[in-house]
Length: 145
Image 1 (cartoon, rainbow, N blue to C red):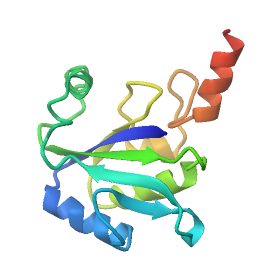
Image 2 (image 1 turned 30 degrees about the horizontal axis):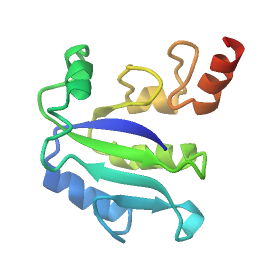
Image 3 (image 1 turned 90 degrees about the vertical axis):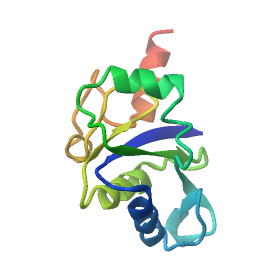
Image 4 (image 1 turned 180 degrees about the vertical axis):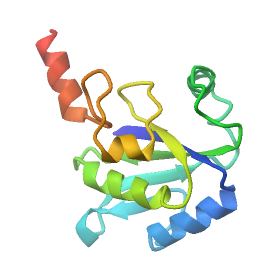
């Protein structure tokens, strides 16, 4: 399973929960799910950091300390992407809806870059790869073996 970590700025947990309920049509919560083409098969599993355990984890702390873009007011959401599907389109649509009325950043499994929604939509390249470029990173790794 692949994952992304989302830092949502200037929104409370309650506001985010309400938005997740709307986006996912509130079929369940924590994880909220986005399903593959209206089936019962989840593509995205969305979790909010209710107890701040992620915020206090060493990995997240290091990411935050190395990034000057992030404000002090943010909530953390994680999204796990099922290995059964590419999940790229579903993830991008989810991020567009999530960031429709707020700002924030997303970190994927492949770089420590804090992607904003504009960079993601415009397919900006970091280390010659776009956001969540699973296939591109895999192919590059195979060439370097």
